[in-house]
Amino acid sequence: MIGTLKQQITRMIDISAVRANVTTEEIDMVARVAIENNFICAFTMPCYTPMLAEKLRAYQDILIGGVVGFPSGADTTHIKTKQAEEMVHFGVNEIDMVINVGALKSKEYALVKQDIKDVVSAAQGLPVKSILEIAYLTEEEITTGAKIAAEAGVTFVKTGTGWADKPTTVETIKTIKKAVGDSVQIKAAGGVRDLDTILAMIEEGCSRFGIGLYTALEVMQEVDQRDS
Image (cartoon, rainbow, N blue to C red):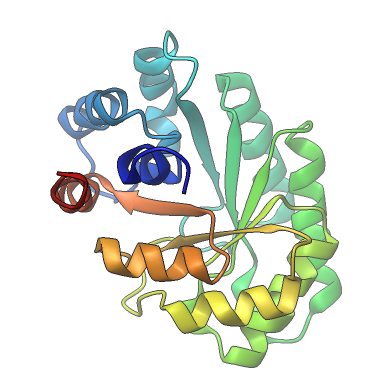
């Protein structure tokens, strides 16, 4: 491990406020907490992305994330690509998109792949993380979805939005890693709520974590205790 535990963990956390009821006060908090901890990236809902970007614009080490097709993934590909283009216009550095979950479960694999490829193209070279929303998938569907996403040109396969009630587990990371190997990176999100889980997922090949504002504060308290 290079540096302290805190130096390692903070550069793996995408802090977020992406619930339907997020307030501008919470967006202020996300920006402040991201700055205080030097988190690698910050996300909020699309309508507030310009606000968050403006608050963090002067902090070159903190990336701005934009979401596409969030949280259902069931928008048309046309809408997803336009949203990706809008995120680029807002000045984001990364895009997290929800795949067409229903199409994956219906074995419409060509549709799933083209949907992702079109968003990757609309992102104009920005890293794209494809969100599988694993809470609704079988292990076989997770494997298939991860492989399709990797083939479609994403930078990361991401486990979930955090809106579903089934958490990402260490076993989930193992399944995705087995499917994609080192061809893409893995981001865990949804139910990742403590430091031990994060460390176990890192051991299995996960390199980024999407964590909500309040959980991120709790995790950093754990990190500070371990480093002290």
